[in-house]
Image 1: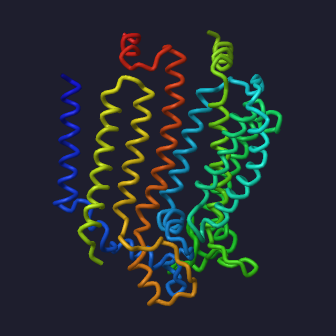
Image 2: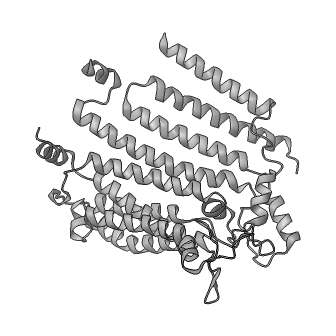
Image 3: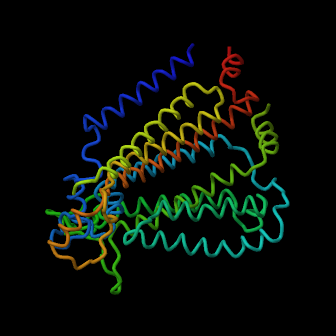
Length: 266
Length: 131
């Protein structure tokens, strides 16, 4: 009976949403007009004519993610950080070195050895061009994290130890990424404290009452102020955050149970 | 920019499919006893709502929200803002994906721990064991 009640309420809910979106215009104009807010973001994503309003990044999504709504992304990074801390807390007391395994066949191993450098190159490219083209720190980090899964599946979890990738080192690199994000956030304020020029947290380009701006060109090459540095820092944080997660998930369950039992005294 | 009858039909079809997928995944979360299936349903719900958000920002015959010419004048920028898709849902979805991933990781580790403690992922049996 309960099952049918649940089903009926879901069907009713979906039908109500379908009606609201189709006949009452609950989602606004779909597929036709561009919203005013979208026009505002698109007009100012890269617009040197309005330096106080622009993010100086030709990629509008990156502009929104790291400038217009940058604090959102900062807290998103905090959520991701908390999830990894929770995972580490659950696995506390588990040593990584106890894992041994054989891995897959030689053909798969050779192909993976060829693929891994390409994977690294693609990930770095996605991170470095995030201000210019679709991509960014998180996408690049996810691309690099594929390597951790490949290593665990193809070469077995013991390959992390052979390559010198320990859980502690992954945590250190992940923390370095988070600290780099914090450095970019606090850089304008530190600059302000040293020079006396007014600047704000996470400030990217000049504002009405602040002349502070991150460099938009470096040796003639266009970068995009904070979005570029945030992307690179996020790349480091996300990729090694994923490494930590996948290293923990690749542990053999019987070994984990044994070690958790010993370390917690039951 | 108006849309033809076929385009409207396809847009509405996509919208209803997404809503139906969200409905089925809510059923999976609420009614299925297996914690694994609840987590899978939650990821499907998150993904269908993310696609719905992207769908809200979609424009027929539009261009990606990437400015290709950096020396564009005001007229060029106005044209760009008129023809590009809405970048805000894409940015929000990017944030939602990361948060969803963090939540999923957390739930997976919790499920692992539940399995270690109770030896099952069936929520009915876990309730009985608790009592």
